[in-house]
Image 1: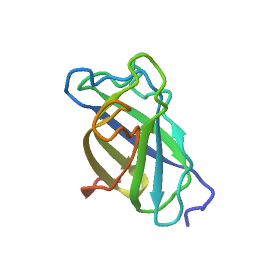
Image 2 (image 1 turned 120 degrees about the vertical axis):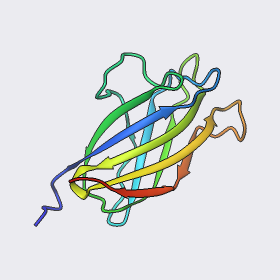
Image 3 (image 1 turned 180 degrees about the vertical axis):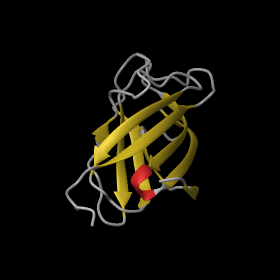
Length: 136
């Protein structure tokens, strides 16, 4: 029996796009929507592979979010606070691994989150393109 009140770990890998000006100085936030519950919006402030500068062009930043077990992830909200000199961000993709579920979710994004680009959105809702089984 898994206690509903026990937090589990979500390993979130965020790939910044490989396009000029892709990097961002903004703080990135994420919200997970699941079959059992939704998380609150959480800023991803300290990465596991602490590189000092986050969300640099064509790089992957990895974060661990410890929060309630929301079950299967249906969709995510990802965006940024639009603060900083280089606020605009080109988001390549997001991958979320949930070790206790033995699942990996892939979210291809490949779009600008920038007030001055495309549709001007700095937050988007996105759905997994694939869900893979991984070793528990």
